[in-house]
Image (cartoon, rainbow, N blue to C red; front, side, top):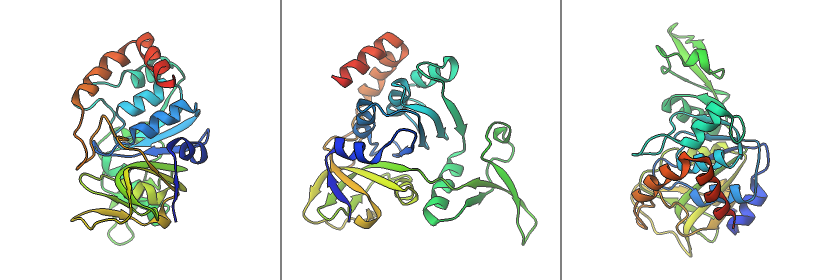
Length: 266
């Protein structure tokens, strides 16, 4: 059964320096508060993994938490670039950042392989791109039945996955609905997992199309109301578009970002 913990305790227990860490969420249910707690606790040398790193990854990179990023798209959705990400890649500030780029399909299949206990996944993607020249974790395999040459990507097994969801019960069973992306697969692929939720309830009410993660698949659950803001949590609050626009100005300048970082730590 998943342990019910406070957010600070969950991060302190489950996220360690040098870990491969996935904070998944596809525009929705992004674990922003958990990511900021990683910053507060000063974790270092992390390999950050996510299909679509946005402003919380910009914050983690700018805070010096990351040594590498594995991803398939990165940006401030609806606004533009991630300036702390760009500064780390271009100028090594605050520390150099290694990047490993994949397609969306490649990343999703890597999570599925990890969740399935398989060593790699096979797909028809990447053909015709130059990612083979820039990404070491790609190979080709020949189908033993048809002779077709396909792309192979290694399973992705994070040390720890962190996601946000709407609800959990007191036994640690997690319920999420709406746009859920690869959160389920990312949790099942990981050695350890932390789920932050809007609320802990006595019993989960059945909902159409909801994803339920049984408590035995999750290491810990923390009740963190508003834990996805400024992204949205369907049924709880809307996306704060102004916060995404404001981040563009904060992140463009190192001094302005450093002041923001000091305020976060206060």
